[in-house]
Amino acid sequence: MKRVLTIQDISCLGKCSLTIALPVISAMGVETVILPTAVLSTHTMFKNFTVKDLSDQITPITNHWKSENVEFDAIYTGYLGTVEEIELMKDLFKTFKKDGSFVFVDPVMADNGKLYPAFNDDYVKKNAELCASADIIVPNITEAAFMTGTEYREEYGEDYIKTLLSRLTELGAKVSVLTGVSLSKGKTGVYGYDREKDEYFTYQNDLIDAKYHGTGDLFSSAAVGALVKGKSLYESFKIAADYTALTIAETLKNPKKPWYGVDFEATLPKLIEASK
Ligand code: PXL
Image 1: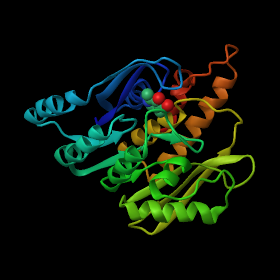
Image 2: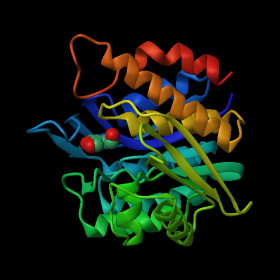
Image 3: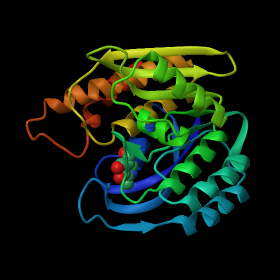
Image 4: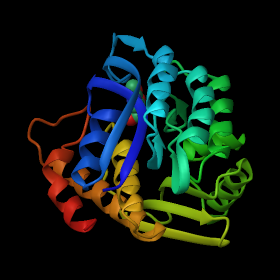
């Protein structure tokens, strides 16, 4: 069985980061080791959330793993929380990356043109450095614009996307995949560039007019699961995009109208089937 290490916060209530990555990647038949970066009462879109930073736990935990000679087929980072933690990731990648494994960085810090609460320019700069040590990065357009010092646009053409991808590639990752890219009205999806093959790829789905929290984490978790199981880049991102779209559609049917997260539990069987 393949083994993934994922490093993100635990938002106890809110369905994002580790409370998505752990169930989703495990359900895909992949052992999922977690390294929590912080414990929050909820994600940061709630008011009055509590935070306990766990930066000081990263080194003791990983030292213990080192003594156990643990290796991972993939390392996947999401919401980290502090610049100190981002710094620690560089060593962690060196220690635990083995031949044939990959590092997947989702530089979670912003959406819809704005940084999440508690992040600043320093955090953006550190995330750009982290992306340099990754094999695959999956920023949304806002994160890509911040990291590359490019103007954020809500309306754009393929030229703008290619400019962002070229600037992201300069950061250093092998594969850059922009998420939330709409190439025509009523569509959304991904647009990626593989530096080694010098190839672009894109996949679009029908846009569902609803915004939910945690969908980026759902997308990344499904992509990591599919990639580590040996699916191609295109196939993995298609599986992840389809699963995310299906889950948003399913959540819209919920009469309780959850605002803080998606009903991914209901659609997991479809993901398991798609990634077999
Ligand atoms: O889904 C991204 C995410 C993860 N973790 C925390 C967050 C967010 C987005 O706001 O607040 C704590």
